[in-house]
Length: 356
Image (cartoon, rainbow, N blue to C red; front, side, top):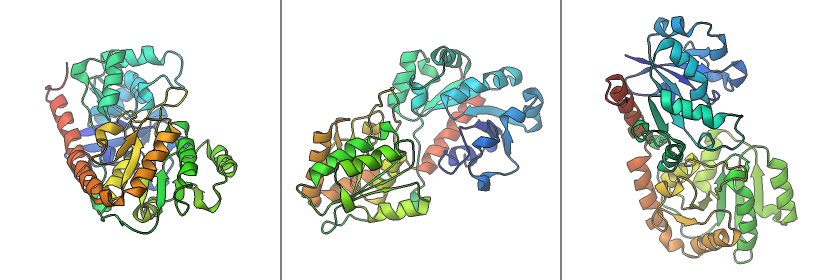
């Protein structure tokens, strides 16, 4: 069984562990830059190594029978170029969002990415939108393979939405600008005028926690609003099951940071929760407006509040939306299918069919 050496930003349960450890037909070595990025020690095993402690890539690769290098972020692909040069191994790089932008990037990032496009064998953007971004930067078309992130559908059982009763709106995501939580909160304030019993819960942690808590006070959202810090995955899933409507108000941040496709949207759609989101980045590849959910222009309070009001007013449409949404996730965002596609891309490259 061939072994792929993976380097990702940090080791925690949210960092696409299945795409590293569960690729069918492939063993793995899991690299992390240095110990401080080993966030979850329960994921530490004999296959985890620190890149800064590998003194000879040329000796390390054959010792561990490594056939392929996979960097799970553009920055990490650049970091692995010397490793690739020393070992002469093929290198693939996943492109996940900010790494296809110049948002908060170091000096010479674009020049280094162009070097990576030249020397790397393949690139796996997580949506067509990001594929178009790196193509515009000069990545050769023949090196691009879109690889959607999948979710484990066995963990998300579809339940028909309730057409009466509560009006609980949920959003889950890091508390950063591109998640658009501030837009959602302002839209929710407007929604409350027509739906005074509605509630909004935002789950996440991040740099904007204090700012969003202050905004909630400013908007006088009171007990109708909850801002919860990061919760264990099982608790998030419980909130998802109990939600009536899921909203991802994603937008391009002032510094140019963008999403790929939020996994939380896929999880809500798999669970049977109707979704409202924005025409942002790869989201329209997941949700066709007025088919699997409802989309509005990004960074627009009035449009978002109108969409939420439309959904709350027309609950009879929810089952049609959610059945189509579950089907879409099963078709294109099933983890098992996407992991098999990842293995196929590896196979083609190692057989010499996917290189250039």
